[in-house]
Length: 116
Image (tube, rainbow, N blue to C red; front, side):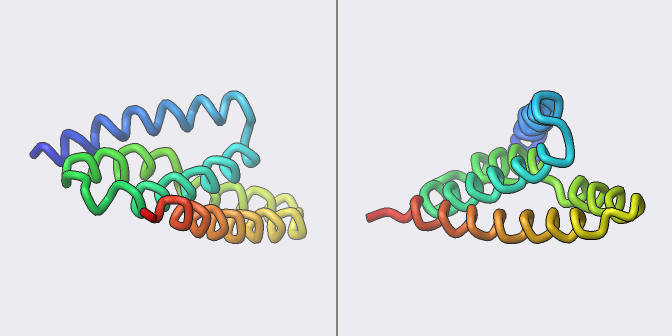
């Protein structure tokens, strides 16, 4: 029950942060930036914090905060919107930037988060 409550509290914060970035930056660029930043943050937390974190803290930060901050559904909507408008090259570029940026950010987060 404590883990569920932690996910709910984390989700409230993650959703509010996401909306704030969406309002400030505007979609679909905000979705790209959010997903890259979220990939980095989650990887950094997994490398640095997960080994010693309680299950409640992991639930709050992983599926709660970062699970609601980053969303694949927003990427899918951006891709469908671009392709429906006949913007195939921007859609492919957006997909490539999302995948490459997210993977690079996760790699960097894991690397920086390693204990030395």
